[in-house]
Length: 387
Image (cartoon, rainbow, N blue to C red; front, top):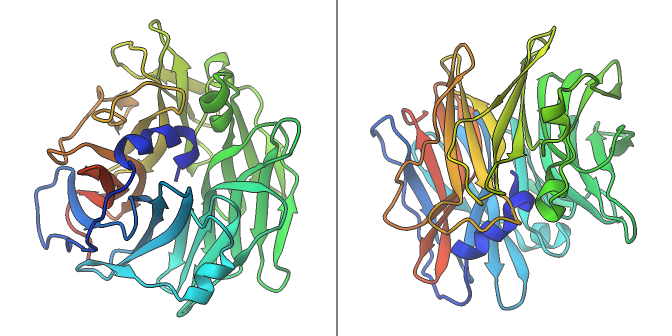
């Protein structure tokens, strides 16, 4: 999930005061291979967004997010589950919700099996499914969690930044190893860890810099690599990546690592940029889009199941993107050939996609759809229905 970099896009969809009836639209048993909405969850309060999807296999996945009480600024967690035929909303026990802490805005999730799913709130609360629901807090100090990797029941990472009262934020990476609980690891560099991707549990790549670009207009790019039991700064990044706001990474091997972010364009906005490491050198591609004052950044990249990549671009918090265009998709085919921006019409209503997750030859997406003066959470799909 990449909510914090474009949080201002959501109020365009989730707006004040609307009473919406709770309801779900089950996923279609079959459908066209293009992008479409397959499930909707209505808010129990003023508006909802699904921010992240955690597939375990083709028949098991979770989508997490939040309900927003706009007039009080508080949140309630939202969880949906996929059983191979339909998405249904999960009712969390009241004690579990309380253990998440205040403002339980779920914004990151991952799973290693149908009995091992973890989700995290922006403020550092964790939610776990291992046959039953449990929850807790990583730390009492102010932190901001943006992403997670789950390798097993006793091997879980959470990434983000510290939130100091004074001074700049610093990278934050903690690992859960079961009996030992959560342990923080030192990460070189500055700014938040916006995204992480792993070749395996001993080979992890993570980006730095996403929130700084979005919140202050100051681009800070960085990449770190976990190997041999510690985090190392990746040196030799091209200038376009060092000055980019890197917010996504996809590591398919140590000779096939992709990063994505944003670079300024000629109209004062920004457009998506990607870089690829082939084990010897970097190749940088500024994606082909008309320059505007809108601020787009690549906030997610996932495999498409056929050797290519789907990328998701979102408007940054400082941008003036309209409700009708806060996101767009990109498709890469073998050979670093990227499409022009793809804006599928998911509905006659305004929509927002906030994350992507691959499963087999299909891709799940989470987000929100405008309904009246509020918004409902959505799950979208590209490809055949998994199951």
